[in-house]
Length: 165
Image (cartoon, rainbow, N blue to C red; front, side, top):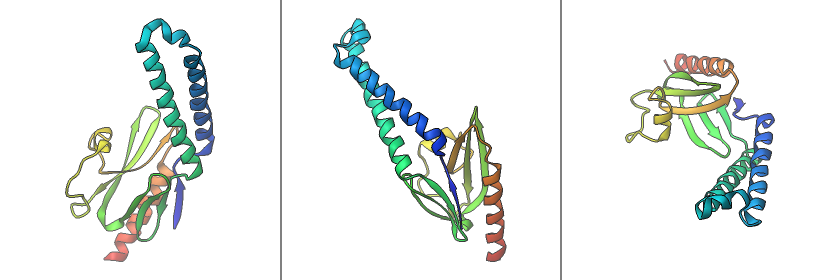
């Protein structure tokens, strides 16, 4: 069994600290009478509090990701996501191939499913983001190459299919 960590703490900690800094600065500015937001009236203050809520929510999610990191578990039975964004085991027999999609500096890894493995009611936001190029999202990395993970997945997939025959 192989375990691949989806996000590194080297990138998660600075982003979490940046989001917390935004929350603190914006909340202090708004609590002190609105400051720069007051110039735009009540709408400016409402948008300021919306920013506090958004960055506060991002901080909570970032903290949860550090506490319970999401990992891609590759086993003889198939692949699964464990942690905050858990997904059930996806058997090797339900996977037809793997897809790498690059969008700027971000690389996504997904897989296409066989007809038997596809859900009866497909959909979801990942279909929109992947432009229909894959059926199931597996992982995303910013500024990193995923060829090592892709090779490991392809090797395990080929091995499982040869044993099944």
